[in-house]
Length: 354
Image (cartoon, rainbow, N blue to C red):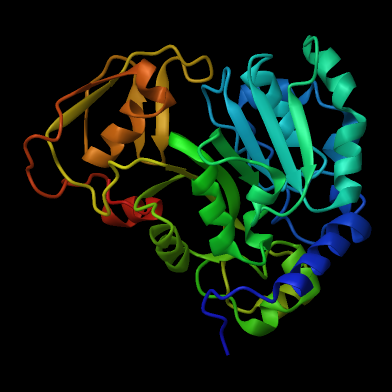
């Protein structure tokens, strides 16, 4: 029998995750799969930032991507499931002393490592005081931690949302705390089908970020239900299960690590509509000086016009990226559905058609 996207009992799931990440795992070498391991091909600016992060923080990191978007200067960033604080300390360097990064995790053993290095990390970054803070709590209840409505510019998460006991509640909280125009940017594990109950109940498979993996169609529906009608896939890569015992338990399920971005925008529609708009990237983002990558099929070359749907226009004009773009045209004239290019199969990865 399949779970059809329903969460496991909250208390049992939370206890499983706390024990797995707080007691069972002492370093990334203890993992039995590559699902929760960071890719080796990190962007150059992320690699450079990682050299400034304490070794103990790095060795107890269990993420599956690089969910640090560009143009973070001065931003308030929230890292859900921050663990020992690796991505908090990477993001802290990009937001600068005028910005702030908040880390939330439910595992005290992980947070103890993050907090131990807070002052030393700020000094290493050349800041007069830490621009970070760490909170012990649940990502499904950020209100209990005092994180107010519309108070966060960017929410990031690295291979953690799949572990949530109540994913719908977690995403509802994300869009509650995001400001209008704010961004959710996260890496996580997706499956090509709904996870069977026996797989979801296996403590090792769940702890390895496989038992709670998102089935993409249920993920799309869940985002719709919390008010997000379009999201984009930035990158994706297959996950190979090399452990024979775990591979046998998983059978024919195929897993992919994806980096996803979504925006809190009233203008977003559930289909990509054509309003005859053209977007120009004007440059200026330090991490992407020559071209801006919105998703896996939108690469804006600096100065080169690109026809875009209404959703894509809003994503680059009505967010923190707006200062770097010129969008010609508005929504006063409608031309029907946007003629999507590239092919449908590639476009469907992003939850929207363009």
